Image 1: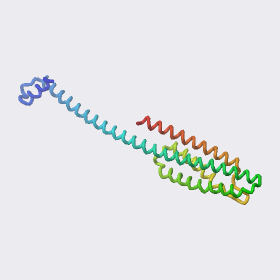
Image 2: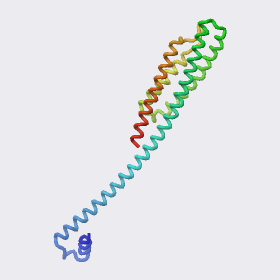
Image 3: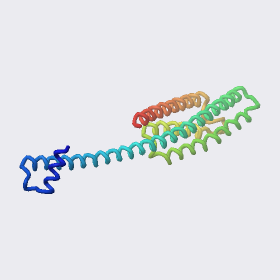
Image 4: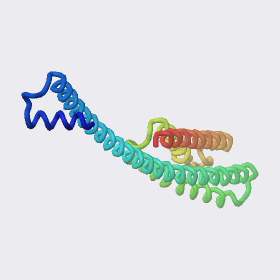
Length: 200
């Protein structure tokens, strides 16, 4: 290192006394210095970009995790209400088949369940539409299938003069399908959280 300092001082003090080797060594040292500076600047830029990327991934993970938590709470609550709807409809169906005088009470309970389900489902539908850009496609598709299927069942379960529009077997199969959609949502969320964690 001293030789470079000596050469630099000689160049500044008396450039004509230097040999071509000393001048070449000085030029190489200068190029090396400039090269190191450029690499240092690039390294600092990479560090800065990496920090920004880590920050963005952290924010994305937190946003998506909160979104999945809210989605799961809403979906499981809806599934719980759908199960209650199925149970009340089964009681109504049994009372209808047995000409039970309590059929009006069971009919009222089924109607109440429908009146609870429809706002819950429309609220969840609005929630996922508002947050659509933040869902990965796989999770969004599973959530939409769950909502669409549940909404269709709830909104088309109408009380007519002949009873409710759906038979108990159909409702049971729809509830089972809803539970499968819920499992698909769970699996999609688990997969996505695994991907997000591995990126952080």
